[in-house]
Length: 176
Image (cartoon, rainbow, N blue to C red; front, side, top):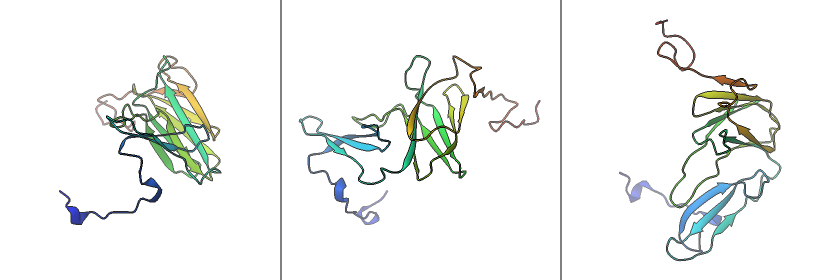
């Protein structure tokens, strides 16, 4: 296990919390401008103020947010969202069902794009294995998307079936 000599204390600047003990934190786009903010709750047994941090820079950067939902409108916990930039770079996010002690993150895949104003595609893999690809989505917005399970013939939906004779990359293993 690490010892004190294995660690170096770093000055955290604006991250220093003087209002109490941080017991939970959540990052999200609380004001809808495409930039993530940080909300920190304080105090587990004693009332203490919350802290809210906003970024000072990056307001000109582009972004895309994907909110995958079930047919009933609930967050699609466990969905895997992959964004393919026009440069070929991939970004991947998972819609996580939990985040930590006394906190919960928003069930949205947030992708920062910097100065890039175009995206090649976004693919959502639903927990049941169904894939849906959105080609050339418009950036600087949130896309609410309901799963393909209720509409398997929906444009862009593909049911990915993996059997004993087929590997996850779609090639056969010679047993068919």
